Length: 304
Length: 183
Image: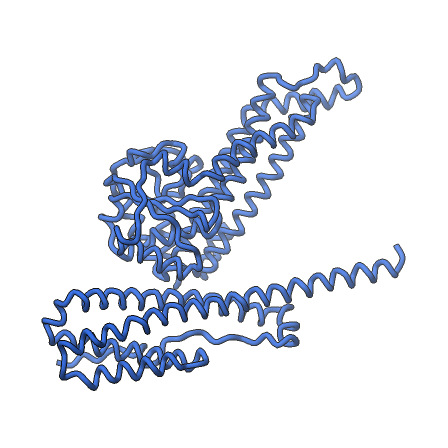
């Protein structure tokens, strides 16, 4: 692929730029897809007001999870907040990386679990939250833990929470339309439209196909974007620490540990630095995170 | 469309582009200034810790008067340094004297075991880390600003409006040299 040729000159900055560029290409493509799907369904159902309903409903449900993302996720994960006094070393590691990144210090939480993992959430940098398992703190060396912290801070700094919420709104929009079409809501009977019979038929047939495929396609696009953001967070982390090997080793250690994380469930799985459900064998397309080998290879290719 | 309207549109668009470029330069310049004052905050932390360190060491290492005086002198020099260039040199000298002080304290086991001393040592080590971190942040912002003043087309108005490149906060030659290990 073209981008592989460019990897000869892969520096930290190239890596970050490439992933940002790809994100926007994917999002534009996704937006075109969403608009196209909306047009087809609206045409088939003979009703364009459903588009507004779908958008409003999608935004409303996503807004709640976005605005209170920190509280919601922390409640689901039974995490405990950590103060400066309680864990000075960890706090200092986070604080120093925040100074390098120019970010405010997020609230730090810990989950009691020996499976090594970490995540970041929060609606913006001022309300940022990062969380570590006791496992990851115990099992990683200082350089490796710094890589992980830098990766999580990069998610906050790159506004990935906001981005993924926008993407979820788009996925929700498409899924709602598909569902409403299948349940025959909002559709005018074709006896109302004498003139546009031919177009109506085509749209109807396409809609039937789309009502099954579109939600799947939307989900695949969401996962593709999620994977690119993971690569970007890795590249940004390497830029912060100037030591990609630290994060590379951390990822290897995390992936070689086969213990699944107990508090993780499918709703929160995508937030973690590595897939918390060990032993899941799914196709690359359905993964929220890129395969660890690819991530480690990308990190080791970078010329600091 | 009459020629007049076209000319007006072109002028307005050009104006907006110029305003955009100017605002971009101002934003980046302010980030550099803020990043510099962030370094100052960390440096001040170090200055504040040193008097306590000196009085602790004095109690145990009564023969090291010269060393302690060097630290005090270096601290005063660093605190009064003005430009980034001067600051850099003075700060690196201060780091050097502190390094010597901690190296010498290895000879005084009572001092090493003192709680206050250990605490100060930890705090100073952390402050060094923070100075490095804020230095990297500053350099990152300087890089962005300098790039903006050099790329086309912003470089044209940058020169006209007096936006000049800023210096990086470097490590001195002495720091970069490998330490000679002599037995």
